[in-house]
Length: 353
Image 1: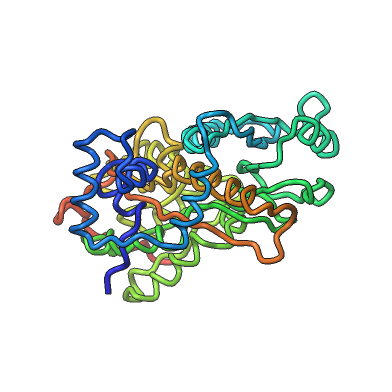
Image 2: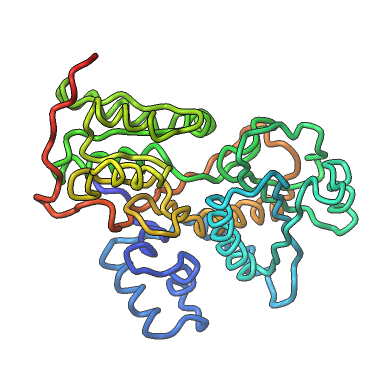
């Protein structure tokens, strides 16, 4: 049974932003006539029907919206040592957040917790003095507790799984479904030996939503094609190559782009002999096949969540936190053969020592 078409699914199929599709479906003059016609024809063909409850809420937001400035939403970032991979991801989240905030009459301002003595207590004082009630907690490198912040004064959402406590509303990628879909697509393309090389810390932080679907998928394969996850704390070339030579995967799924270099230095042609699939392509400026976790859509969804809370005058830690998960997209690149007969030939694993 096919899923009900939504504004986001229409936006994905048309290559437009959800905001543009929403405006076009309402016949807004801010969208070019040719685009409005294109969106409305696609919606009719797909059988799209608007969600009346959501429509009523957004109509009320638009009714009270005027071109004047409504306020500022704070994006909270820590001063932990910057990780170049995460910087790119943050930039895309903030771009999506700023675009959606602007459409709703808000601006985004970054506050760096810990910078210049900006403690959580001082941050709350500054935000209240500025009249800022909406917060987006940006992703951290490692999960932490922020229990001593005065949440009762703010409408907040956290990105991904950056806060262990308190439990706030969350916007994050749907890692489980995204991973499982990719594994099935690889199998359909002829890949039977798929290996996962993964930071144990990162996997634990997202509640095993990478290794979980991988292990479940492995149970669908013949026992001889099942490959154990290579969990690591700090991955090294010798550690990876020992695992690779033992199990001989046709494709390695991982965050760590160094794997491509290690394979090539070991005489393995990528992607002809072994493919590489990146768990987050945005973090790889050199280009690879893998997941586009659509961070701009994550940022836009975070703004929508905060604005909805502000509209409903909801403040503090929610009694029943909600999680908005957005499915990622497969992004083609140079590290994986996608032709029907493109999968590298399976090689028998080395015998156990």
